[in-house]
Every structure is written in C-alpha cells, then in structure tokens.
Image 1: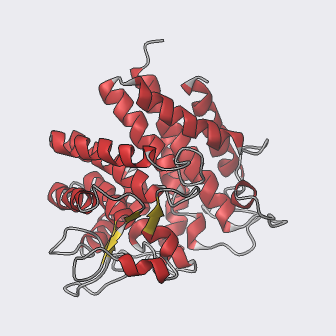
Image 2: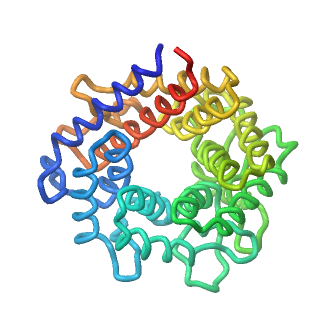
Length: 339
C-alpha cells in the first residue's frame, strides 16, 4: 500500500466534511450538534487544503462555543469532562493557529497554559482553578504540549515533555499495567482502575483494544518536541513509548491507534527507519478499511455496535480525526520516500 492512497482517502474524508458544511460553518443533517463535532475539523480542513472551510468552522465555534476567557463549552461527553478536559482546547489552538485566527488561538492558549501543574509539568485532567492541585495524565499533557509548541510556549512544552518522560521512567519494569495519570499528590493513580475513567487511565499490556492514544499521543508530541528543542532525549523517549506499544496486544489495529501512527510517520521521516513506516501504514490500513464508500467513518460500526440511523456528532468527530491522521501519515511518509 502506497502512502499516496492514504492521502487520497484523507481527501475523500475532507470532501465529505466539506459537503456537509453550511456557509455559517455548522454541519447540515446534524440534529443535535455538540461541541465534539467541531473541534478537530479546523486542523483537518487546513491539512487537506480547505482553508475557507477552516475559517467557517472557526467562525461557528467562536460564536457558539467559545467563552471570553478562551474555554469552549458546553461539554456533554464524559471524556471531555473528567477524562481529558483540555483535549478539545488543544485542538482549537492548533487549528486556529494554522490559519492565523489569533483572536481564537491566543485566548485559548492562555486558558490552556493556566492548566499546567506547577510541580509536575503535567496538564490537569479536569478543569482546575489556577493554583489548585489537580490530577494530571498523559493525554491531557501531550495534547496541551502540542498546542504549546504551536503557540510558541516552548518552556511549557518542555516541562510537559519531562512529565511524560517521568511517568514512563516510573514504570520501566512494568509487566502487566501501565498507569497514565498522576494524583494531585504526584503519585501514580493506580486507584483509577476502579473509576469511571478506567479505560483512559490503565493500559492492560496483555489485553486488546486498550486506550492506545494514551501512549500514542505522547509518542507524537515527544517527536515534535525533539524537533523544536533539538534534544535527543525527547526522541529517545518517543521511541520508548513506541517500544511500550509494541509490547501490547493489538496497538496498531484499534480506533485509537492513529496518533501513534502519526508519531511513527514522523520518526520515519526523521530517521529513515522503515519499521516506523511499516507501523504507520499498518495503522493507516486499518483506518482506510473502515471508511464508508461516501468518505466518512462511523465509529459505532468500527466498534461493532449498532449505528444510529441519522448522523450524530461522533460521526463528524471521527471523520475529522481519521482525515487528519491519514493526511499526516501520508505527508510525512511521502516526504521521506524516494519514489
């Protein structure tokens, strides 16, 4: 499978999104639009050459969801309330910076920066008053770290990188579980295995279908941080996260495998090591294999559960996400390939 095929599928996904976008930036045929349907679209549109669609989406998001202090509400999904609150914010920073929408990007970046834990360098999992201790996790920290890089906050990004190295080093010899969060006291949050957010907090190394992006997003962010800082330690840490994923059951064949593939595609572009190319394309093959004929993705079908009759916010969310990952995988691989 050629990387060009990934790019073509990304364009097909982007075209589906474009076909469903109204002039005001909202989605047509979406009966109950939620914030989750919009936050990934600006980055995906920009990557696939649709800047006008990006601006329209951001217009809508600013008018309907953005608060004066740079947050985005309301949050309706559990994942965006108590698992990794800043995930949405990070995507909006990245997407708005890409097209110069600084009236969105700068307040959003300031809001996000205030959610970094002063002691550990991690970013809070839930909305936390500045100066108040809070729990942190790898997903929130890596997503916010990418947003910090994009918005020029290199020191905050570096501290996020050190957090991700630290939480990995604490579990170098783990053989069964990897814990992805720290408590407000700065210790591994092993109690999360009994909580409603268990899936995001505990990776069972011997079980399939885990939360792979809790490891894959740190991988990708650390590659970016390596490039921004020119420090080898961050690339080494990225490779260590990849090695941890390779110890798992099916890390390259899951709905949440795309972020790791992005990281591997970047590692291939940087190092030329073909094993990273092979991993990235393996994930891409999984994603493309679930694309509908009209170009979009249905997460329920991917997970093997009954799908809704009409479109819902998750359909737009996952289509923007898979469009993004396929585009990023393809572009980094093609930048290194000689043929």
